[in-house]
Length: 163
Image (cartoon, rainbow, N blue to C red):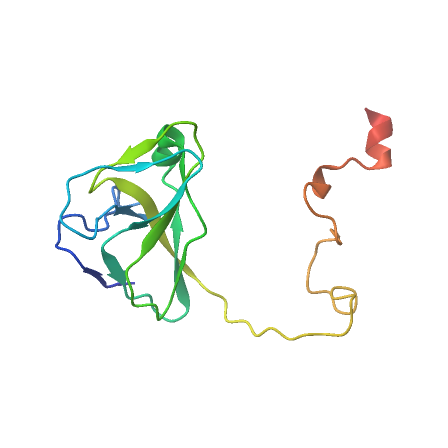
């Protein structure tokens, strides 16, 4: 697949794949004005960081902006929910959250996140009045039910007696 992109502010920091087998393209911070100043992100703060890139996402796909493990580990900067839909033709921003206890600094051109292109299943959502959404037709092999938030880690009474 070929995916076109356009650099809005020069060609200094294009999205790159460090290794041919990498799933994501590294995205850099490209400030809106020609700047060499660092940006500080305070503990607990969230900032929208511009990438200077626009992408042509084909129909049937989306681009998901994800953490770079090195940025998350070394700087404790995590990416918030970032989905770029097909048809969006504006600049891509990265929602960075500082979960650490110290102000973190990034410089223009620093790699801040990675972009992964994934297919989107074409589904049509249909409302039903039947609350037993799995019981009337077997569309799943799971018997999870309405268990959530760690419910699959709970021991059954049979497992409790074996410990």
